[in-house]
Amino acid sequence: MNYAYEESFGAKGYGIAQYLTYAISDCCTVGIRGEVWRDADGFFVAQFASNNDFIHFARGDDTVFDPRTVGGGRTTYGAITAGLTFKPPVPKPLTGLMIRPEVRCDRSLNNTRPFNDSSDVDMLTAGVDVVFTF
Image (cartoon, rainbow, N blue to C red; front, top):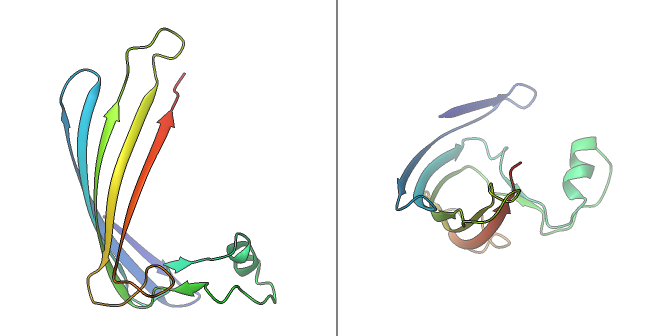
C-alpha cells in the first residue's frame, strides 16, 4: 500500500498492489501481480513524449513541451501483470542469472483515456529483463 501527498500542489495519490507467486521447480517461478492506483488530482501520472520533457519539467524550464506530453487526469488505474522467472542452470560466475518475461494489462477504471496519446482506456505491454547477480 502507498499514499503520496505533494504539499506544494495539494495533490494526493494512493494505491495497493498484491503479488502471488508459485515455484514450479527450482529454476522456474510463475507470478501474478494486481495493482490499483488512484491519481486523485491528476498530478502524479504523466506521459512524457520527448526524452527530455521530464527533465525540463522537473527543472522548471520555460520550454515548449512535445504536444503529446500529457497527464492522465483524475484517473483510477488498474493493472494485472503475469510473469515468469527462469533461473537456468549455468556455471559460475553466472549462477545468479534470471530471465523474467512478463505481460501487463493496464486499464483506466473510471473510463478516462490516459493511454496511447490519450486515445485508449487500456494498454497491453510485453517485456523481458535479464538480471545478473554477483
